[in-house]
Length: 334
Image 1: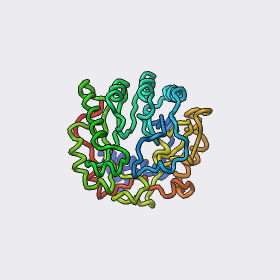
Image 2: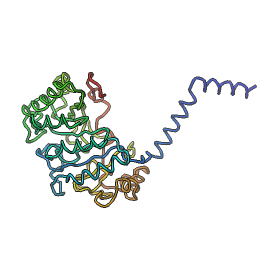
Image 3: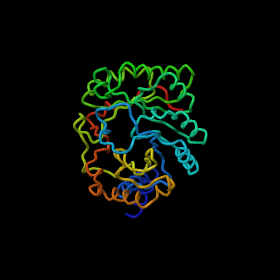
Image 4: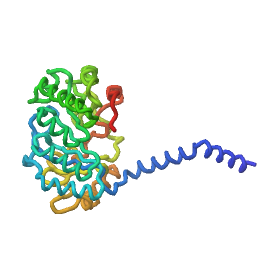
């Protein structure tokens, strides 16, 4: 009798989908404990087409940069793209520690990657160099998305953070670029405005939204990583840290073809390979990368100095500020 009732209950649970939901939750919990799996191919390549920059932003650590300034050679870039296409990389982002528009070959780099089959290409820029000529070249390049870093909604806040930039000029640059795109009747490139949630900007969120709601496709508000002195949202609870997703969803390639693993590793202190004499897949599945991933899977962050005190799990934005993390309604990427 009891067995029959249990069987009936099991059938009801399965019919209603409860069991599958519970099983899925258990699988996810086991996966979280074990740590992320390494994809066969890096989902994203971050390619540093230059490590030069024309600004001295308040939150940036460029003053500690010890690597030699330079642009990636076009021949080296082509080699990366050719291999990326052959192994099925779906996304490349053309910047890391530098302003990509300082590389005069940027539009041609985009054209080469699109022509050879990279599905999605984007880059993040401060927008200060977007004159009309560059804007038209980029619009004709096939770029899929451009992320403009524009912090604050007033001249005072913007120029305090983006030291060396002019508020009115940069704003006009971005607005002109969007007008030129729209005049061509295009949906691409998708335009993202990215603004940092800082002490200088925390009271301007509504103004930022109003400033861009009529022309941008998306607004992204981010907290800064590892800078509690600048972040009104504070830092994460390090006791609840998970393995860093960047070890599993992207590869960071410096302009000299050295490969690092961390978005905060300005000088490449954690290098896992060199694309001058190794392939993307050799590095991605190599022993150096695997060692770091396993340290993270075991939550032994203290073993890697740059990871030990990192608060990048949610970029330091507390739940109390979650209502300020918004996306604009409007055009969707096609």
